[in-house]
Every structure is written in structure tokens, then in C-alpha cells.
Length: 156
Image 1: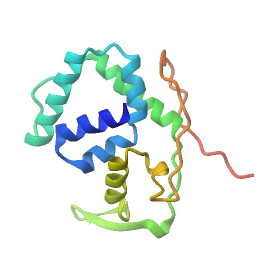
Image 2: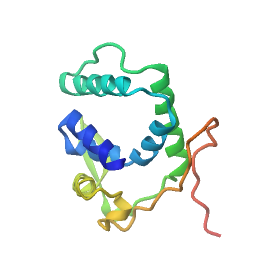
Image 3: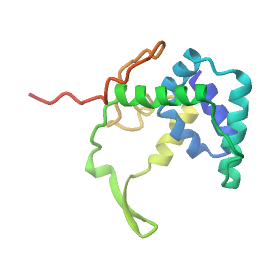
């Protein structure tokens, strides 16, 4: 399912870097989509609408139904609950300017994501970096309550 989602997203955007972004939440998205009642007709409409928004810079009106908004909320909540935010070693972080504002970025992250997408793997599975770790598993079928963001256990 992960490969199918990434391929659909890549086809919609024609941008492998954008597809790589999806890789971070695709397994949870797949579970949420499988557990939701979104029809294939709605999915096609949404992909076309997002494609138009990315390519033309403006949305064609409504992009989501309440049913799809619920699925998106479940994905974001489950990702936050299952994947702890962790520090990345400073040695791989650099500061760049975007619109005259300093932004911290990971050296080579685009290449890392592109290679991981091509291999059909998550960054921690790819062997390309040693600082990426897997998220916990979280079954989102019948997901009804956001349990709060994941917390990295403190070293004691």
C-alpha cells in the first residue's frame, strides 16, 4: 500500500521530492484510508484537486469532504501519537536562508528521501542515515481519541 500511495502522489505532483514528504506518514495514511469510508470517487476528485492546486497555485473550490477531513485528522493525530520528535545530530544540520529568514535544514535530506522512496523504504529502513528511528505501531481502526503527542522516554 505504501508504494501505491507514493506512486499516486508522485503522479499527481510530478515531483519526487513532494512524494518523499508523503513517505513520512504513508503507512498511517494507508491504515486510516483503509479504516475510513472514503469512496474511490472522492479519492480521485481529491487527487485531481490537489494536483491543480500544486500546478496552478489555486484550489478549484472544495478540496475535502467531512469524511476525508476526518481521515486526515486521524493521520495527523496518529502520526503525532506514534512518532516521537527526536533530535538530529548537529553535524548534519545546516542553516540556510529562505526569504531572508534563517532556516535549519538537514544536509542532503532531499536525496535521502528520494532514495528511500525509490527503494520503497522508510528512512530508518534505508540504511542511509543512522539517526532515523521507526515510529511505534498504532492501529487506527476505530480511532476515537487523540492520546497526546509521543514523548521520548527520558534517560534515567
